[in-house]
Amino acid sequence: MQDPKPEVWLRGPIPNVPLLLQPAAYALLQSSEETERYLADFPKDQLWTKIAGRASVGFHLQHITGVLDRMMTYAKSETLSQAQFAYLSEEGKPSTTINVDDLVVAFQNKVEEALSFFNTLNEATLKETRTVGRKKLPSTTLGLLFHAAEHSQRHIGQLLVTKSVLTFSED
Image 1 (tube, helix red, strand yellow):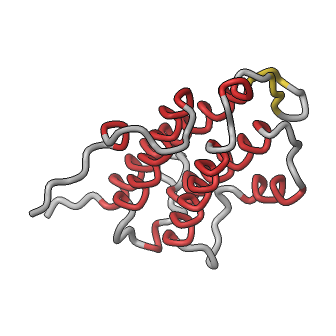
Image 2 (cartoon, rainbow, N blue to C red):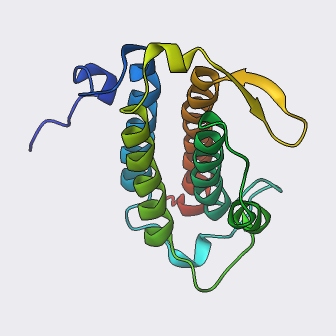
């Protein structure tokens, strides 16, 4: 059996990503890998199942993709589009046309997009003030991108617990 790869942060620097964004890049890549690993063979009929009133696996997958997209938009000093608001309003709503694999791939694609965006940034840009939402709450480019990464990690943990409860077997 082949030894598993070390966690992303133990594999060395990610090329072209600014030093201050390396931790965020590590967290996003780790989330991407864990999502694929945790949801291999996940039963498609459980995607929208809620346990104890908590969010479904489908919600977590949609949400981490949406948050990453929204945080990148704010980091670019842009406002959300109508398409982003529409996506936000659909997060977690059960759908018969969406499957686990599509949601995993959508998140992985958004992580790749984020890493490409990271490659365009420099230290000065990371320190620039940015605002969030309609209330224009204060942040910075670095703060937004770090939040996207840690938020993804938090939801991956919640997703794993939900998945584990849904697929638990006393075999």
